[in-house]
Structures are given as C-alpha cells and as structure tokens.
Length: 227
Length: 103
Image 1 (cartoon, rainbow over the protein chains, first blue to last red):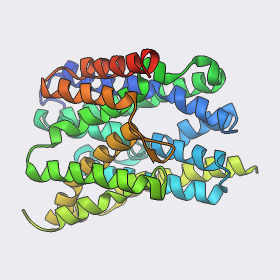
Image 2 (cartoon, helix red, strand yellow; image 1 turned 120 degrees about the vertical axis):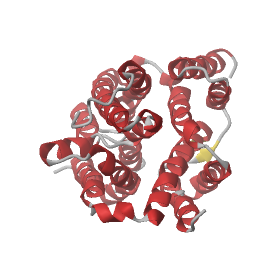
Image 3 (cartoon, helix red, strand yellow; image 1 turned 90 degrees about the horizontal axis):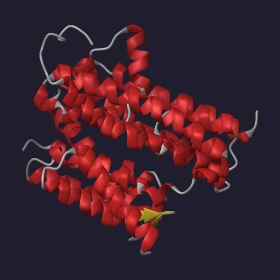
Image 4 (cartoon, rainbow over the protein chains, first blue to last red; image 1 turned 180 degrees about the horizontal axis):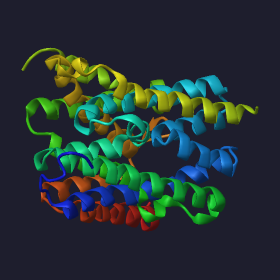
C-alpha cells in the first residue's frame, strides 16, 4: 500500500471498520440480484451490472427504470447521474491514494460510497490508514456484493425478504455511521440537515436517484464562500 | 443486442468513465481552497441524502416504516459511542423486530 506503509496505525481497527461496512452492504447485493431478476434481467445481466457498473444506487436505478418500462437511454442517464458522485469521490481520493498505471484503473472501479466513506472516516489515523481503509472496504464490498448478487439472482425471491433480517435498515445505518464523525460543527450539521430535507422534498418529484445528486448544490453553496 | 444489455453495458461503461474521470482531473483543481471546501461538503450531503432516502422513501414516496426505528436506534448508538458493528446489529435487529412482529 505504498511508500508510507512504515507509518503505524492500528490495522485491525481499520479492518474492523471496513468489514463492518463491507459485509452488510455486500449482503444487500442479494436484494439487488433478486430485484434485477424480478425486473426482467437475466442472472448474467444482474452479475454483469455488479461486476462492471459496481455502484449500488446506479445499479438499482438502471434496473428500476427498465423494470418500470423505461428505455435504455433513460436508464443509462439515471445511472450515470447517480455515478457522478463517484467522480467527486475520485477527485477527493486521488490526492490521498496517489495511484498510477493499472492501480488507477483498478482503484477507480472500487471508488464508491463505502470505500470513500471509510477512507475519509480514518482521517485522524493518517493517510496510510485512509488508503488501507479504502482498499479493504472497496475490495470487501466488491467481493461480497458480487457474491450476494449471484446468490440473490439465482435464488430470486426464494432467498427470502431482506427486510425480515433488518438489512434494509442496516444499509442506511451504515451511511449514518459514515457521515456521523464528519458532523463536527454547525455548518456541517446544517449541510446534513438541508440535504435530508432537500432529498425528501425532491423524491416525489424526481423519482429515485436524482434527489441524491441534487444535494450537491448544497455542498456548492456552502463551500463557495470561505468560512 | 437486447435493450437490457444496452442498458447494462451502456450504464457500466459511462459509470466507470465517471469514476476514472475523478482521478484524471488535474491535481491543481484539488489545490483550490474553494474546490477543497466543496469537496469536504460533498460526502456529507450525499451520505446524508442516502441515509434519508434509504430510510424514509419507498417507490419514490416518503414513508415512515420499520426502517426509521432501526436508524433512530443507530443514531442513539452512535451518540453513545457504541462500536460500528454493534450499532448496525442494533439497527437491523430493531427494524426486523418491527417488520416481522408489529407492522
């Protein structure tokens, strides 16, 4: 993991943080696999989305639009708009990861909410811990997400209802745990509160997916002026 | 090619290019203090929106259900500085309890 690996940090603690995100989030891949097959996608297409697209919200959006009778272009557009945030994450992570060559192409693919979130939450432990958290979480989610997509797609509905295991609450709880340490002052809490309100207000209007992207205007507005 | 394959592969290619684009923007973009400030807020607003959308919406409608109870328990656990996995288990357990036995 690079040049600063001599800088000490508690690997077990970072790995624990990474796995406690990767396992529940990855297991939710079963819900995606089942949703994709229920939406008319083949098992192969469901697995292709998890392997190649590998961004949960975009994947659900693509499946949702197609299952709802949308055309491929609107499915691609919705998925892409949701994927913009991964580009922002990459901007944020590139100065920390300092990836070159093949590592950059690999690192880009695992640049998602969870890997970035865990990496940023390790800021106080130093850049080596951030890099470790990024890869441990990204690879962990990739493996579990793809495995459970296959299981979910194969088992479709027979795997059972993820809600009855509380998985539908565990995923937002994971996101809450990721954003929690970043709410360090009034301005960051206001950003979070505004984002919650805006995304809920826009959901009935814009449907699923876009309201999340729309909250970037809050980040632009609050970040534009110096504190 | 079927429409489903066009959607699958088209979205995959564009989303991968978006991921890569983040790493390909010039380093100087990141040294701008304004970009840095915006960049600090971006995960906060997106993660917060993901929490609210995944907790309080279903089929593009705002709903209150078992998930909210789970996430409220998660917030309490975080406030009490409970460890991350335990917080998630508490959230899942609460939500599943209400989903299976109450609602």
